[in-house]
Length: 232
Image 1 (cartoon, one colour):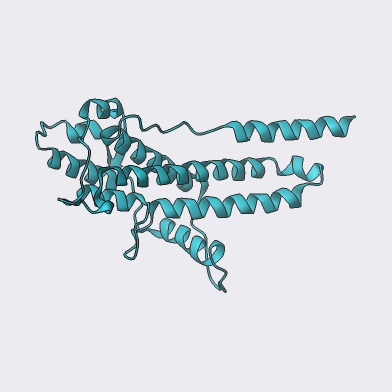
Image 2 (cartoon, helix red, strand yellow):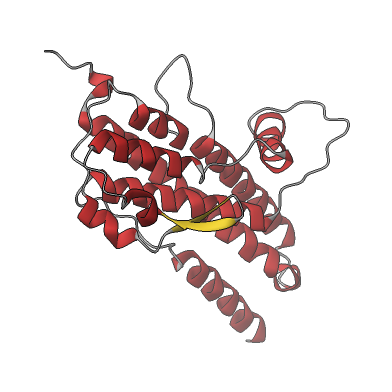
C-alpha cells in the first residue's frame, strides 16, 4: 500500500523541527526586545536610543509573527507547521506514527499544565495501563491541547497585532493591546513544553536546546565597550 507523503511517519518530525525553529527565533527576539527596553537610559546616554528603538520594534515584530505562527489554526489550503496541526495529525487515524516510547516520555513526568484549576502531570495522564497505543496517543493529544492558547482577549489581541500592524498595515481606530510580556513568556514556555513532549514520545534523538543567553552576553559586552570608549 502506498502511503501519502503527508502521512509518512517522519512528516510530523519535519513539522516539529520547523516549530522548534520558530520557538528559538521568537525566544531570541523576545529576549533582545526586553534587554533593549531595560537599557534605555544607557542607550540614550550614548546617543543610540533611536537606533535601538528601531531595532527593538523589529525584534517585537519578528517575535509576534513567530509566536502566532506556532499556535495558529492549520491552513485548509496547504500543510502548515503549527502545534495545532501536529495535534490534529496525532489524532488522525490515517497518520502513520512511530511507536510511542513511554520509557523516554517518563523522563518528562515532571511536566505539568494547568487544567480545571489544578496542575496535572503528563505522566499521570498516560500511566493508566494504556496497552492500546492509539488510546495513549489520544490522551497525549488531549493533554497537548491544554498547552495551546484559548481564543481569549489576549490571544485575539496578539493575532490582531500580527495581522493588522506587523504583517500588514491597516488603519486602526480603536485598539487596546492586552498582550503582556508575561503572556508571551507563558506561550513560549508552553510551546517549548509541547515540542519536548512530542519529541520524547516519538522521535529518539530529538533535542530541544535551552533558551540561548549569548545574545544577552553580547549586548552586555557592547554596552561595556561603549562605557569604556566614553571614559577614555
